[in-house]
Each structure stands twice: as C-alpha cells, then as structure tokens.
Image (cartoon, rainbow, N blue to C red; front, side, top):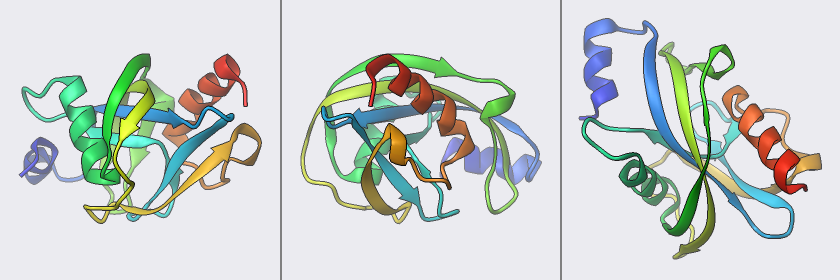
Length: 151
C-alpha cells in the first residue's frame, strides 16, 4: 500500500503535502504529450506521488512506467512548483497541497500502453490547442514550458 493511502487511513480527506515527480514530454514539433486521467477526466502531464525513501528520479521512472508503459532514458529537471495554485482536490474528496518536481524528457523507450487504469487517453497538444479541462496544477508548468521553448 502506498504512503499516501496509509496517511489517508489516519487523517481522512484532510489536506496532505504531497511531493510528486512529474514529467513534460515534448515531441520536438512544438507539442507536449498529455494524459486524460481516469479519476476526473481532466488532462495533465505525467507522474505521481513519491513514496517513502524513494528518490525523485526513481519515483518518476516508476510512475511513468505504470501510467504510460515507457521508460524515460534522458530527462532533466525543469522546475519545482508549489503554493496555493498547486492545491488539488480529488473526486473522492482527498485534498492535497502538491509540490510538483517537473522534469523534461527528451528521449524514451517503448510503446505507450495504459497499465494501471489511471489513464484513459493520450494526445499531443500544442500551446494553442490545450484542452479546457486541464488540471489546474498543470497550467503553470505548461505555460512556463511554452514560454521557454515556444509552441
């Protein structure tokens, strides 16, 4: 069972601080790969909570493997995002103050496959066609990405 699941047994839906390893995957043509989440139907980048004693990089590789079925082979730190705009409430009522440690991935291996039931769909998006139902906490990092690298 995950660390967050264990904490939730003790505190219910109260807010937890949740460090997350995340990644933006560009295609080199001005688009980024986003996933549509199964729990709330919103779009966002990839990643998830870091487990106890797990390194950020190991959490990133694990989460991307679970969600997308690929292995990241080249990635660099893009930025760390925290604060009020990163607060997230899950459909089940769980509240989180997320700290997203966001990487950029330039190379990966494998074919995309949805292994854990978290992902409904994958699609490439440019800056100008981002979905309206984008997860709020992804807006800032994606805006920074497109500002820095264009779209």
